[in-house]
Length: 107
View 1: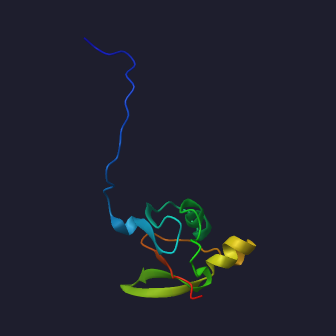
View 2: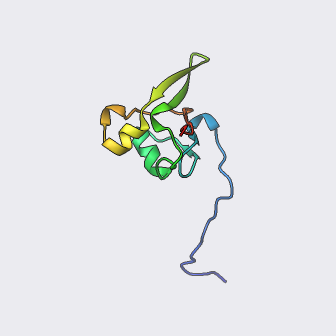
């Protein structure tokens, strides 16, 4: 016998695939994460997805680590300006494999 119109729930326990196709955020975010890159993804998109900066974050001292031609290039980020002041000049386009590091502030 057959079940008519079955309802199925699928739970993904772990993601497979190439880690280079992900964007990672480490450090002082509300929810540090590794997420799948999607075309057109920006720093603002990522920060919204992770819930913003933690109360201890030094967002304007953050860094973007990107591999180009086999070398890691580090770019300075101004996440605090982007989120607090809506300074869109601080928004950047992300690429697969990018790692954003947000340090803790020094009080």
